[in-house]
Image (tube, rainbow, N blue to C red; front, top):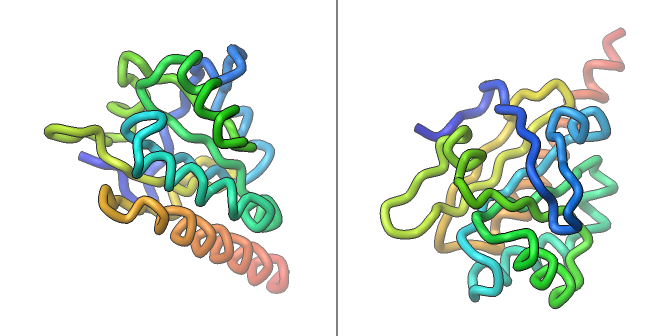
Length: 159
């Protein structure tokens, strides 16, 4: 079962496209995380999705977002994909599908395309699951980031 809004996000450490290890717990301390799972590097839908995150990068960052893409492709494949499309965010290799499994992102034929927005406390604030609308994931993520920011502003105004 896919995790839902309000659930604690599973923490993980995994190899990134540059060969370094990424620790989600450490990344969350720096900002709200847009964690998106996608099927495969260099496929049509996955390229469209990655490029939509790239094309909205400045807005994502200005809303406090840190983007991390996850697929079962290798570090080498991720590095090539990242360079080819000039992606400014982290791609994480999950060859044993451990991360995907911990988030409940399972498919029948293809790995699902699911985006989670996780706040700085590690709580999932938004989940968007759409295999057929890859470019909508960034729009959903931006909307969730804005909601988190608005709630934080509202909360600080009440103190």
